[in-house]
Image 1 (cartoon, rainbow, N blue to C red):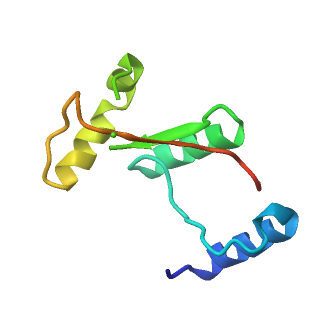
Image 2 (cartoon, rainbow, N blue to C red):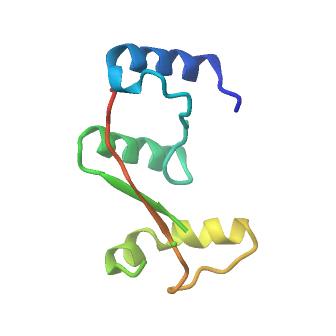
Image 3 (tube, rainbow, N blue to C red):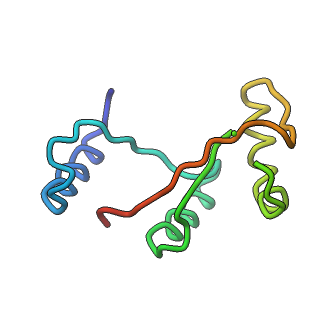
Length: 99
C-alpha cells in the first residue's frame, strides 16, 4: 500500500496521540462523495459528530433516495451499471479517534 508523506505524518501523529492505534499497520485515506465540496462538507459533519456512518453500493431509506441517489447513479455509471432500488449498499460506522 502506498501512502504519501502527508498521510504518513498524520498517521504517526495520530498514533502518538491515541495509544490504542499503536501497532496498527493498516489505515485508509479516503474522502466522502464525488466532489471536493461534498467531501469537505461531509468531513466537517464527521468532525462535528453529526455524521456517524457512511455507505457505498449495498438500502431503502427515503431520505437517501432524495438526497444521495444521484451519487449512486454516478457511481454505478462509472462501473457500467445502473442504480436500482434493490441494489446492495455497504454501510460503515464512523468514529473520530484523532482530529
